[in-house]
Image 1 (cartoon, rainbow, N blue to C red):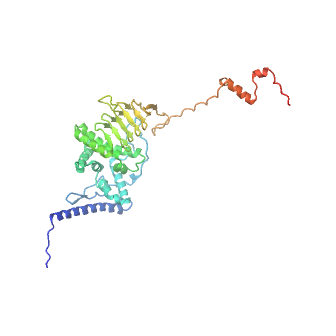
Image 2: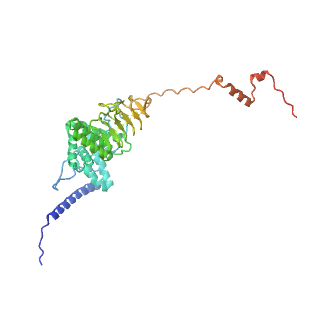
Image 3: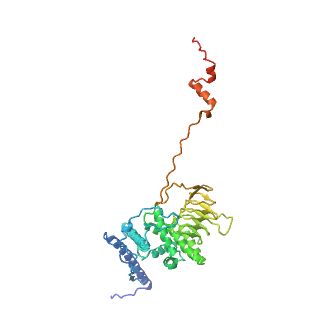
Length: 403
């Protein structure tokens, strides 16, 4: 009996095509992992752009100028975490900060080393970092995959974020997220690598989502801005109104429970911990939210209510309730918060000469004899066998004869 060749059914044909696509994607991920593990020490890793797989299944090789990690191994040496060098508490790009291209090369090198140590994460790290040519493209992909939902595809959000990060007119957004990344790496002791903040810190992701939402709010596209704010609130547990103005070099540590009102203003170089509320007092409308200066530290659980100003370089203690103005270089602690000046003898800036400490106060003199209590003196004297002046004038006491 001769066997006849049968043509596959449409459903079987679709399954075969789907299996081929899975094989191609798997081979792409395995190729990246093998390339990272087989690279010899001292040779540049990923000197060429990774192979991009399109929807038609054909690979397209793109030039990767910024992704080249030549010389990035030296940038892996973590610089010392120092304070900012400027005296006016404004954000400054210090010498030890990495530029955009060097920062992206450092992140790629860190991710390559991680994928070599943890092969199980090779696919994740390749899709989020190594498969992209620029840091803008990678961050847009990460934010889109964290904010997408069933009715809002990640591909649409990726295009939206990428346009904002790469536009020359919106260079402030790009400068903002680069400064935020440097600030988080410098101030957060738990941040050991740039890639750790770039991939996993939801405070960093929340503030970048707000920057894009604020751009659309200022353009009058309020519906799109509120949509991004709503998705950010669900994904990162932060509620930042799109109209709030936030500066550069911001660190949101943990960021859980953060609330920032509509008319709030946050200056450059601020550090805000979790469960912080910048809200209104509920008595007035219009401009009703706090104005935070530059280089301000707000502790966990602090409440700053009303249109009050917190001066530059001030600190708000954890759990404090601030309802009045805080002068510059003061500490506000308590419920309600009380202002205390920061010790001027404290060495704040590295290059500022330390103030000479004041001489120690003189020791307290012992109390004078005239301040002693006469009754207490008489009792103590009688216990010690000391006779008073009246007893001395009356003469010696008669001695009793022994029986």
